[in-house]
Amino acid sequence: MEWFTSSDYWLSRLVFQRGLAAIYLIAFLVAARQGRALLGERGLTPVPRFLDRVPFRRSPSLFQLHYSDRFFACCAWLGAALSAALLVGAADRAPLAVAMVAWLVLWLLYLSIVNVGQVWYGFGWESLLLESGFLAVFLGNEHTAPPVLILWLTRWLLFRVEFGAGLIKIRGDRCWRDLTCLYYHHETQPMPGPLSWYFHHLPKPLHRVEVAANHVAQLIVPVLLFTPQPVASVAAGIVVVTQLWLVASGNFAWLNWLTILLALPAVDGRRAAEVLGLPGPPDLAAPPVWYEAVVLAATVLVLVLSYWPARNLLSGRQLMNFSFNPLHLVNTYGAFGSVNRSRQEVVIQGTDETVLTPDTVWRDYEFRGKPGDVRRLPRQYAPYHLRLDWMMWFAGLSPGYAGSWFTPLIGKLLVNDRTTVKLLRTNPFPGTPPTHLRARLYLYRFTTRAERRATGAWWHRTLLSEFLPPVRLEDHGSSRA
Image 1 (cartoon, helix red, strand yellow):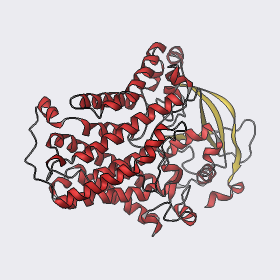
Image 2 (cartoon, rainbow, N blue to C red; image 1 turned 180 degrees about the vertical axis):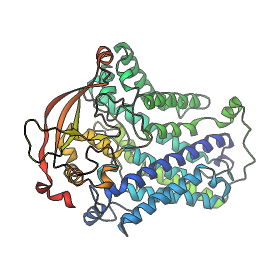
Image 3 (tube, rainbow, N blue to C red; image 1 turned 90 degrees about the horizontal axis):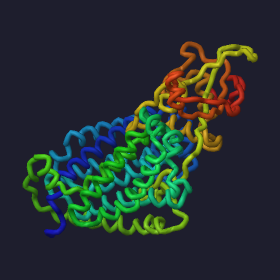
Image 4 (cartoon, rainbow, N blue to C red; image 1 turned 45 degrees about the vertical axis):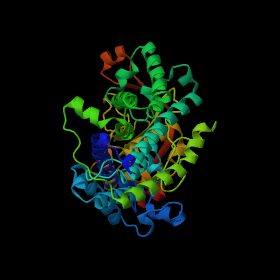
């Protein structure tokens, strides 16, 4: 079937697959470094407890067959090692079938982690990585030209990511329609970056231009991905530029980088190689019949499963970041359908004093990424993902978001649990655990330019209320868990 492949996209496929392997590597490193504290047998939300109440059919995972912290770590490090191998081109030096199996193993390993990840893995970039990883299984390697059908499916995925996000905004918060959402977003987003203070202080007319440009990029440009070249390549380029703008303005794990990668298969690789002065595509053999059959079967599966996401896009009750099946294939996406007007942060504090008085000295626990010390410039961590920091933002929105993990977190800090403390930037009690802990809710806002010059602070905070009254180890039954 001559129409089945197109060598014009060999470079696009190459960059996409290497970039996807890099994202996989980061995701598995996050699991290896944070998994035990968050999900381990003595973690904040233990996997064994989750498996006791959730059957395999609802959450298929290797860990349904066996779980131990060591086995989880082995799976995470195996995924990291395999990702690193694919990143340096191992798949292109292996037979086609072996390369496909390698990508499939990566997908199965990460699916197993996501499906037991509970609240820590409940975000759109997890499903996006799994859906992208599933398509990568069928993209082949340098032994054959890229299959056209899978290239079109990557465009369909990118379309749903961008168009879904655009629709959820237009249908959601009024500030997206009156172009004022960016008056607040850079300050109230889950985890600001080092440039967020500067983005926040851009002139308001420019903020309105940003929102209008966002609507164009997410509601008009995605349609152009399905047009002939070079228009599709231009549309992909616009997606890349807008995503880089988001990368510069905040921390959203690997969401933006993966979206950039998804735009690349829409770029005419032959023309890109000519512009960049790169060599043309190598001689590519005709694909074997079995490969054509597998790709056709995968295409039919994705098209059938696309019914539900397509219907969701047309629905007035559009779901955001939702998976219609436990394998996380062909999902719906979207972000920031509503934007907070103020930022509330939960600050955990401890003391080593035995008796509490009005003069008791309380010291803050500092997290790696979330705002705390008002003089500390927000850091850039993405595409690495700080899962606990991200969930602390949700705790500031409502205690209900922290119901399953905040009390265990306090218990771990009361005993200086080493695994948990490693998730934090600073532990004010490195030698002896604190006698008491409390949590307070603060209103945070970026300082003005004048305040920044006068105080050196990036944030200003005001106490709102008590989030958790002072507790001791003796009062905290779960602290020994």
